[in-house]
Amino acid sequence: MKPIASLVATAALACSGGVIIAAPAAAAEEAPDALVQRVFTGMLDAVKADPALRAGDRRKLADLVEERFLPYVHFQHMTTLAVGRFWRQATPEQQMRLVSAVRKLVVHAYADALAQAADGTPTFFPARGGPQDDDIEVRSQVPVAGGALHVFNYRLEKLAHYGWKVYDLDLSDGWLVVGMKSSFAAEIAKGGIDGLVSRLEARNHQWERGLPAASRR
Image (tube, rainbow, N blue to C red; front, side, top):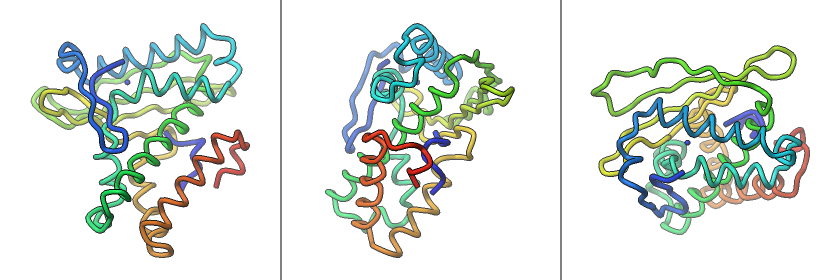
């Protein structure tokens, strides 16, 4: 799997451990590009306004992502895509642990990406997809130190009653689901579903202990 540090919008639907939480009906009517722009800009503004966030406080950054971004991510769909055909082989408990682990991976990846983009102003591009499409790609980029550009791209699907939800991310290192699918299959081949779960949970624990990015492999 690619380094989590380089991977990668307050209330519509959240999927945590397979549980779906509904949100205000108004949010379900929001266009996908408007949703991404509102939530992403709001998070960057929050980082710029808080010295601890600007300094890279990982716990606070993760809390911000949990509050502002996770309600718009369909983690079960993301996880089933990443696990692929092995999803049907997993027990309900294993499936729940996989979704929980992927959820944390996204929190950590997005928190690290936000820290890198803290001083930048995002540019948003027209959504890729027509007005009748129920699968849309929204792209944005943020200038970071050294003149580079950090990508924040999203793939969203439209769910009945819940509106648009993110199911894949590109945080300047390729689409997350694509990278996970390849590495997940390799982990399952070595240690089965339990081996994959253990590997993901260990990686999350390392991030939460504050190890440097270079150690999170």
